[in-house]
Image (cartoon, rainbow, N blue to C red):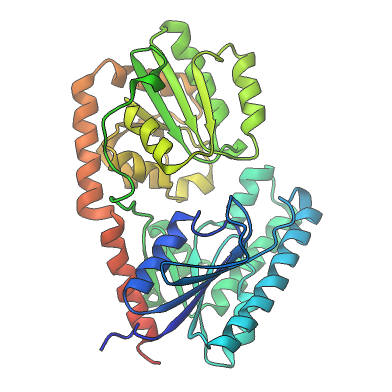
Amino acid sequence: MNPLDNKHILIIEENASVPFDRRVWQEATTLREHGAEVSIICPQMQGHTTPYEVLNGIEIYRHPFLHEAKGALGYLFEYGTAIYWEMRLARQIYKKKPFHVIQGCNPPDLIYLVAKQFKRKGVKYVFDHHDINPELYVVKFGKKGIFYQILRYLEKQTFKHAAYSIATNESYRKIAIGRGKMPSENVRVVRNGPMLDRVKIQEPILEYKKGRNYLVGYLGIIAAFEGIDLLLESARYICDKRKDVQFAIVGGGPELESLRCLSKKMGLGEHVDFYGRVSDRLLMDVLNTADVCVNPDRPSEMNDLSTMNKIMEYMALKKPIVQYDLKEGRVSAGEASLYADNDSPVDFAEKVIFLLDNEAKRHEMGEYGYNRIVNELSWDLQAKRLVDFYGEILKSF
């Protein structure tokens, strides 16, 4: 008997909309395909603003998203409003059809407050650990202080109220067991593996090289802690030495316009294209054209312990990678990447130049990364881990 059959799982996410969030949508569709009924609560944002719709048999309830928070009061208002809507919609969904599990996807570490309301009804709380919020706060604001302590408290409460936790890598699993005091058997790693039917290898489209010989590609959020300013320093170093390299930066975020301006001030306007948030088709066109892909994430404890989706997608497209020497970045990519000295845009640039000038090495690294995705890290393999874990969670119902 399949323990997922006819079980109802409610997934709550506050930080992104669905299906925009790849991980959450992959989890939801996987659970649905294996017999569970799945409902999702998320905000109206990122182009998905319909309050209610059904996609692939999954009911999606979207609540208003009033603004993107700035400062402590802004975050308090944003998260307070989100919790109100999550509680209201969760009660509505439970009345329509009781759910057995609430899966809360952070940030923020507040969704346990919703799960607490249903604990006496026998609903289990599963924490899907996307970000280590205390470390993320330090990266964003460069300090600890009272708000850091509040985030540590909320993280502690989240783990306390969670019956089970899903970690994106072994570093996060250790945090759940160590800081979170969770039993090791109740924490399972399900990595952010790419779906190979979406991330597909295709022929390059030379127009994205803008008449130059090489293209260096970046995919990700355009935010201060992502290190795009470091990438621009590396780009300037490269462009001072040679004129045959174009850079493509794909993704949206709060610093997009300011970094566009910085690029122009640095004299890189003709060599660096900022595409913003684009369709999957354009994303694949650009990345498949890239000769080298980069991850300039600024070295920090947050980035050191976190797995970046972009690395997996680069590998799935057979792209050699240059990144700073971060723990989980090295765990994910292995020999598919070169690792620059931390905080050295010059060393980063020299490693990009080395790969551009060594086609055989690029091919070797690309093949290594692709084989690692196919044999170890793809979503098909991670989905089995998710389904097996949920089988253990739901077998008591």
